[in-house]
Length: 324
Image (cartoon, rainbow, N blue to C red):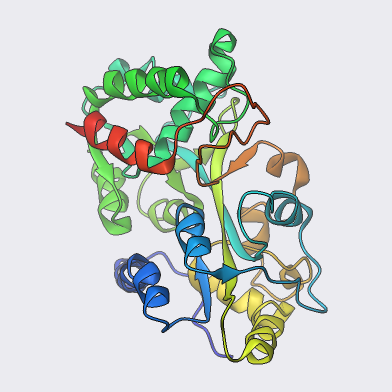
C-alpha cells in the first residue's frame, strides 16, 4: 500500500493535504445518504456521525484479528458501545491549543475567560462539537454546574456553555474549518491563540513561531472508526478489509498520510522517526487527559437517569445561535 506521508511542511504539501482533507470531508457529509440508498457497506466515520449511521443500520463489528489496540482506543470505542455500535478505531488526534510565544503554564481560560487579552486574534474550531471544549473548561472551573462528561449536558449545563461561547465570540477573529486558512492565520499573526490539531501545528511551525500544548484542563479529541453496514451482502469482504487496513503496515501508512496517531500499537515501529512521539501515540498519561468526541444523545452519557441530556441536534441549533 503506497501512501504519501506528511513529512514536509512547505506550502505545496499543505495545499495538497488540504485538498485531500476537503475531498474526504465532502464524502463524509454524504455518508448518511449513501447508506439510506443502500450504497454503503463499510465506512470510516467521525463521532458526530455515528448515531445517524447507526440509525441507518450501520451495525456492530467485532475487532479484526491481529490488530492490538492502543489502550485509549480500546477503552473509548468498545466500553462505550452502549451508546453506538461497536466500531474499530482507525486514527485519533486531540484538539489542542496552539499559540505564538507559549508561556510555561497555560490554561484553557486564555481562550475563554481570558479571550479579551487576545481580542480579534482568537481562533476556534467551527463545529457544534466545539461546545464540548467549553463544557470541559466549565467542568474544571465551575464544579457547581455538576458537569461530569463534556458530552453529557442537560439544558442548564448546555446554556452555561453557550453563554461562555457567546462571550468568547466577541474576541474570535476566525472560526476555522479550513486547514490551510488556519495555518496562514498563524503564519501572518492574524491568529495568535486558539484550538487546532497536531497535523496543522506540524505544517505551520516550519514557518512561524507556533507551538501546541495540552491545557491543564485537558482537551477534546476524536478517533475516526470503521463501521460495517448491518445489511451488507459481503461481511467477509468487509472484515478482510478491516484486517488489512488495521494491520501495522497499513495503519502506519494511513496515519502518516492523514496526520493522526495510529491505533495499532505495532504501527509506530514502521512510521518515520519522531512521528508517533509528535502525536503522543502510546502515551497513556497524555491520553488520560483527552475527552474523545462522542455524539451527545438524550440518554445522559454520565449515567444520570433523573434528567434528559441535550442531543447533537440541540447542539447544532445552539452553535448557530452562538455564531449569530
